[in-house]
Amino acid sequence: MRGFLPNDLFSIFTEVFDLSPRINSDTLVKQTLPAVDMYEEGDTLVIRLELPGYTEKDVNISVQNNSVRIWGQKKKEQSKKERRYFMKEIFTTSFNRTISLPYPVDEAKAEAYFEDGYLVIRLPRLTTDKKRGNIIPIKRKK
Image 1 (cartoon, one colour):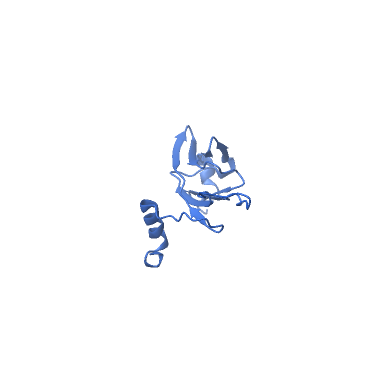
Image 2 (cartoon, helix red, strand yellow):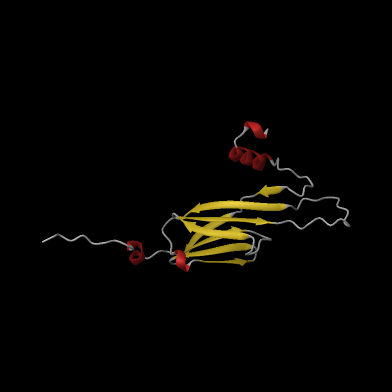
């Protein structure tokens, strides 16, 4: 079926109909899309992602062009030869999420931390003084 559908459409189709493979493979990586909340607290934009089992070493964040990109990969534990598995559904999981921001933010003051299975990203609103940046006033020549 994969040959007939574009990759994005195939991903949506497999999520809706749960066609994701459940096989014991050391090379299998499942792409997931973590749930996100985005809200404002005062002058700070807060983005919360549900990422149980992830650590700060597993996740990357970048802010660019009025959007935040969050991506990461959680490695599964290596299968132990002395174990006799009856079921093995835990495997490497990755995600890649880009979120458009409702307004410009001050990247230099951004912070991120894990709290109870959530990644919390705090992005202060960019003040109007900083937005002006490199504006050069034009004067009339005498």
